[in-house]
Image (tube, rainbow, N blue to C red):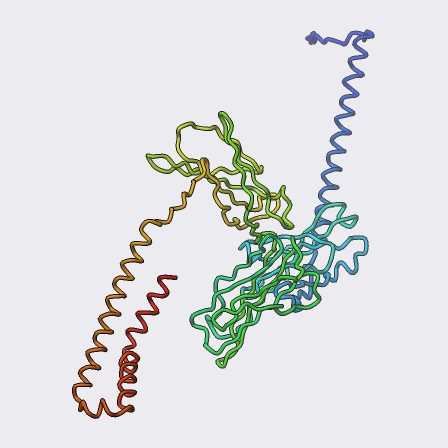
Amino acid sequence: MGQSTHTVSVSSTLPEPATEGKRSHLLSVSARNVMASNFSVTHQATLMLLLVTCTHLNELAVDPPEDLLIVDLGHLGHLEITWSPPAILIEMKECPEFYQLEYFNTYRESWTAIRTPKRSYSTQFDLMKDIRVRVYTLLSGPCTNGTMIKSTTYTELVQKPPNTGVGGIKVEHFICVFSNMERMECNWRRNPQMPANSQQYLYFWHKDLEQAEECPQYIISGGVRSGCNFTGKALPDYSDINFCINGSSLEGPLKPTFISLQIQNHVKPGTTEKLHLQTGPDTMEIQWESPLGRIPGHCLEWEVEHRQEAPDGKIATLILTKRTSLTLPLIHNHGRDCFRVRSKLHKYCADKSFWSEWSRPTCRPEMKVVASKPEWDMAPAYVYIAVAIIATLVMSLCLGAVLKVRRSRQEKKPDSLLTSPFARRSLTENHKDAIQSSPEIVTTVNMLLKILK
């Protein structure tokens, strides 16, 4: 039997012996494969480390502070907030204490946040409103690998205002004016609903006082206290000064009023006394001096009122400047120009200020006051007329007195009048009595003498 043999020819391509360039290429590919393998291992290790770190940080959840308190030291609203660290910080000595305090600012109607390493903080509150504070614990340092951790919860405290005093009865329109930074006065208006027999008291406190003090000198208006004069009492500027106005009455204590302010924001400069106006060929220059006192000149800004008076009316222009002089163009045949100035503290020295009183106006050209000449020619005529009237009255009164005497003589017997010396004396006295019984004569003569003098 024949055996058939099939020969299958398989074509196979064998690699050629490597040359020098190809060998370098193979080595480079091999190195990249090794680096990719190492990067993959490193990336996986980094992810594992981050996962372990995050797990560790999640396990380091920190508790909020404890024993939160609000302490009133009698400083009329300046309160001290204190707290204690959580137990976890006592055990973790390597992490420093750090806290975030938040409180509701009743003056700005917004929350204020403070970060501090301390366990207490002092600030100002309005005691007639709710006091709300809350505090967090912050954790950072070696124990957190430099990452800041904040407690997810906080400790909060809300303190209600005291419900004391006759409801709805407290002072109105409390205002303080620091005149020329020398005289400090605070005034208020008495509430119409306040009992007639009530008495009010003002207390104040600032950082230089250990305890609150009463008003050194009350201002009395209409028999009741309506203000306080602090003249001669040193008060700090750029520092909070707290005021409390309370009172008593037969119906019970009055509801207190609390105010906090800084006196540099209540300054009213003095009135400018010296104002000079000079005119040139084409310009007008007005100069003035700062008021005497403790106010630095560089803290003042000025408002100049330029009033132009012309036949067709008046025009007033207000000009703001920080200098003590002003130059304006001169308008010929314009009419009359008048100037006056006032000042206040600008925003770089105080948050707000009162305007001073206006200075006395200075005008160009000056108003010449012509004194009226006395009418000497008419004066003698008035005197002559008065003398004539008075003389006529005197003569009429004298004539009346004489007629009265003659009428009385006719009523008596002639013999008794001629034979009795006593009767003749009585006749003379009757003349005198007639004259004295007419007070109009005396008054008229006195008026005549005064006019003649």
